[in-house]
Image (cartoon, rainbow, N blue to C red; front, top):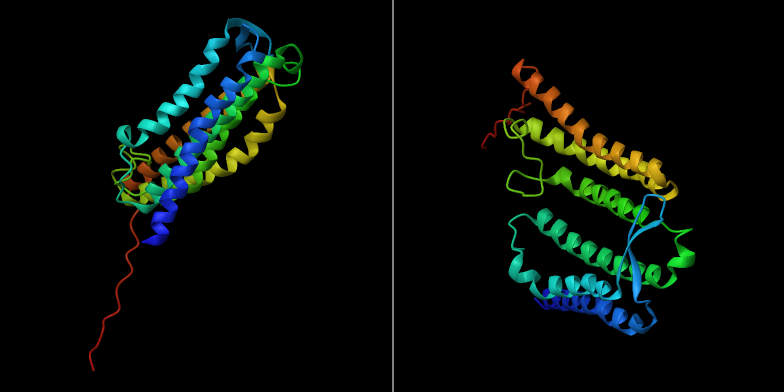
Length: 237
């Protein structure tokens, strides 16, 4: 009981620190920010839209509102331990990414005349998406039929073997694929970055569907059957 209470206190401290810190940092740096800041960039990192520096407060306020109203908006009482763990770590990851986004935006807003030649925000966003696939790929292999963090299609729901094999396939594909695509996103730019991002989405979405359809055809032809191991008879002495 004491261990659970200690864990809950650590979680509260985490949310408090990373919920309030972006707003405090933004307010502290606010006098150094130019009145007009870049708010949108082209694929090569060039600025194509400008805005007012008051817009920088939006991300900080979103983080603060998420922390304050998270428990009221999202239901986090799960029957499955794996799903509960995924949701908690997903919330931590979401807050940390928003914190990092807030600080990067502040840095770019103040130093856009020099830093945009060496830094592209699109690399950051797409690397983040790639990491999300890897994160879910690590856990989705354990998803059960009651989990909302699962692949629920007419194919996976018709047979337990299709369900298990599909989730294991997606877990291996997303986790290993994220390691392959991550360096591509990190060191590419312009239209090459866009092509790699499109390729990742296609591979991560289309290949599981093809695999599900393949398993479905095997199931209809009778080639996909559950292997039931007969229980050994217990003899009483």
